[in-house]
Image (cartoon, rainbow, N blue to C red; front, side, top):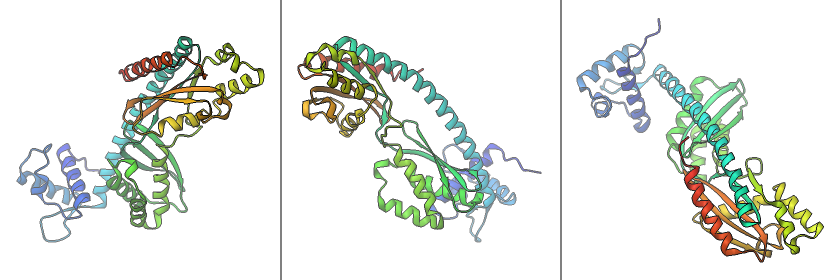
Length: 346
């Protein structure tokens, strides 16, 4: 018959495991009594720890009063943690799907309105993660020779990475890798993960260092911008024909192709988002534009910030004789609108 732990025993077991993970030393009742959410005496905690010992969830390695988690205790802790994280991941995914659908509709309307207001071409990118902290990492088995790493970062950015392994891992090994990753990386800013930290984690993982490397690849991918992930909403390509210097058939064709097929727009996005402190207006004139087909144009961009490390780019493309004052004012208004509208609760 499986024992069912009441909530107080679960809280005490969780406190013992978390304290042991932090210190590596056997944990006594006096230490546990300091946890604010327990609010029970040391004597009560001693009785509960005695019960947990008899049930096999903790063990007493020496004659001292301190206890450490057993494999059974770790298993209950990880199963509870996994259920909590799976529920959190499901909730985050549902939220992000709703938020993404709403955001797409907003950005499409914004691009269309911007092109109409300025009589130039306009682009608005879906915001990307600009780097913050890791919330948690969960390794789970997919099949005998495959794991999945779920990485959740601040801003609720989720990355899934399938990891191929050379031989099957038991639950205990996966548990230890989860503890290793979360103990060392939870709350750590991604930009602070350096080669030294990676080397130490791989060394601690021993023969499973390849798994650690794959997980860190997934972490790094949260701050990379690539063509597959980038979505750009554009409008107003036909406005190019309103300006004689851009209306030449071959020139206009190449320009519209670049604009509508998004070819090269990635360079503009990267350029704008690479300026970590810059969320202001940037102007590229003629040869300054990092897209060859737009050498006869001017491009004015602004970076908008949604909080939680999420940033995107708004851009207006037109002739070099564009009305810069009007364009900048339009971008400032749109940037302000995006900051307000996108962050409203659904």
